[in-house]
Amino acid sequence: IPKAFCQSSGIPASQLKNFATVALSKKVSDMSNIFKFVRASVVATIAVSALGAAFAQGYPTKPIVLVVPFAAGGPTDVPARLIANSMSKTLGQPVVVENKLGAGGTIAANYVAKAAPDGYTFLIHHNGMGTAPALYRKLPYNPLTDFEYVSQVMDVPMTLIARKDMPAKDFKELAAYMKANGDKVNIAHAGLGAVSHLCSVLLRQALGADATTIPYSGTAPAMNALLGGQVDLLCDQTTSTTPHIKAGAVKLYGVTTTSRIKTMPDTPTLAEQGLPGFQMVVWHGVYAPKGTPKIAIEKFGQALRAALKDPAVAGKLTDAGAMIVSDDKLTPAGLQTWLEKETLRYGPVIKSAGQFAD
Ligand code: ASP
Image 1 (cartoon, rainbow, N blue to C red):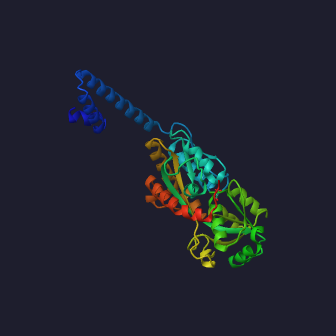
Image 2: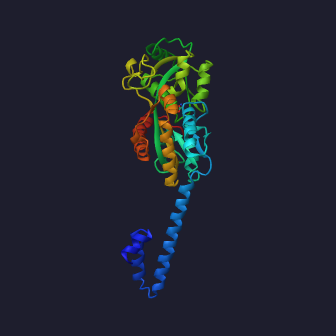
């Protein structure tokens, strides 16, 4: 088949070459069969590329759902809504946040993994995307194969806080209190797979204390329980805890980053208070079901990046301690590489803690 035809038809040369080999090997005497196939392929290719162009032109033509795996009002939900509102303006269609709760974020992730890959369902999730494969031995989805990657978003430090009347005046006293009181001390979290859960596991492991962990559907309800004095401790993102710390409504023992954070310069890290190397930073990614059209991934990613550069959005996020990631991480490859690395990192840590969720 003339080379020029191959190039102009848009049909991959390999496909045409295979066809030619088969046709010739079958000694097809009637040349018209060959041209019938080629004509059908050309029509099909034109039709597919025309459909693709139409999708690209119109997309999005209806509201887009952004699934949040935790309760409204928490540190995943509030930033997601802030970002979604800004994205709606860029995309010209509402980006609607839907909270799908439970099982430390795995119910939401599974829902999106199984959703129609039509460009109208996306997921925002955090470290839980990388820890779930180690925590859940029967995970109904594979974070590394069942999704298209859109972008990372932001890294958020965590704070270890307590009910206001907790007796320990600093982290050193808290560590002694936790060791002395064992399972009488309780720590709230957002479910197995949540970062608040992982933080509590690492804290108990580091202190050799077996405090009781209490699950909620997100750290918004967990924070309400803490403010109401029903639980003792909570490890949560600064995007949720900052206002309560500033209002003096909770007791603050430290931040979980390896160095102090700009928004709380006087707050020591847990690492400098006796837990050298203790680090918990909450990273976030945006995903779509495998097979979502590339143009949808690109347009949603562009709108996300524009939102994160929107001073109204970026200002609020950084005031709450969030660090928007660098441009190289605001890409599909930037998210995929990070997720692969995190999944490898967390596997052994969680398996050694023997804290399986199922
Ligand atoms: N902070 C929660 C967690 O521990 C997530 C959330 O409630 O937004 O994963």
